[in-house]
Image (cartoon, rainbow, N blue to C red; front, top):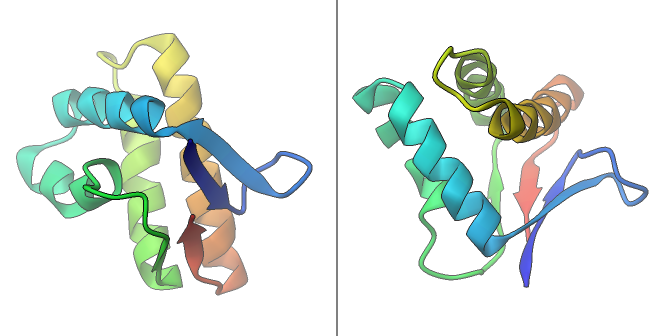
Length: 104
């Protein structure tokens, strides 16, 4: 089981990762973002359930900016930076389209 996140690049226009991968990605983000920035997005990565949720387009835009910043941080491992970049791209596409960013 895992997350199917809208506005990705697979054939279903999704970014798909397991719950564990998203949780681990969050741990890397926590190490490279400021405490305030991390707190503002940790709800995406520390979910207690797999219940679907949506993020408003304006919020997705803000999150994309933070994810791009994290992807380019010198302490972000290259393999994780690639995943952060893909997730940021998905958030950015949702924001640019004025659509909700959906995690299901």
